[in-house]
Image 1 (spheres, rainbow, N blue to C red):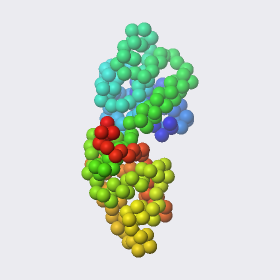
Image 2 (cartoon, helix red, strand yellow; image 1 turned 45 degrees about the horizontal axis):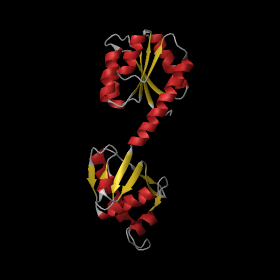
Image 3 (cartoon, rainbow, N blue to C red; image 1 turned 30 degrees about the vertical axis):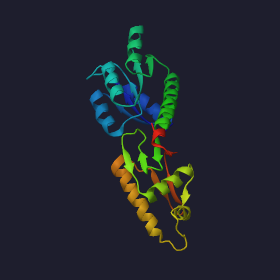
Image 4 (cartoon, rainbow, N blue to C red; image 1 turned 135 degrees about the vertical axis):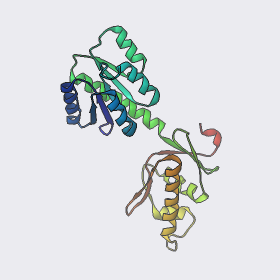
Length: 235
């Protein structure tokens, strides 16, 4: 879970620094901000997984910010605020907060809430990030079905082998034999050309690069990929 990107948005300088140091000491990657504008500028580039949000910001109400970003992005929100009224808590949770912690608070509680939230985010991301390969139709669907890639017969064969071998890599010799070629006679540069062309198509169509070369061993598809033999199975 420590690979997740966490943003801290807090206008109190001392508390902001303390929160940042706490998370870094716990092994998290964290950035801290005083203003909503600073956070939004960085979030547009980094796409944080979780935001620890103070509601009393100098340039924007925290409730409004939470509502805005929860509509636009998949981001976890932990509200950290002095507003302790039941109505505030209900409003915060209703507009998108995953947790609502009132000040003063214990750091252990914040860490527990953060850990639980990141576990939920991890499960949700894993469920969403599944590629789908229509074998007969020779089509690859992106995890969110936002795009579909037309494949050649050779590309389809290679993706089938990469999918059925997950989570392990596939050797170059195995891929060459899957293409119906004799490994001893086959020019491996032809395989490299097919893989390179497929990687380029993936990058152009999906802005993704899930095929990784493992030096001296072969190739691996880094993300989950499912095989389907009928378009009706793909939803």
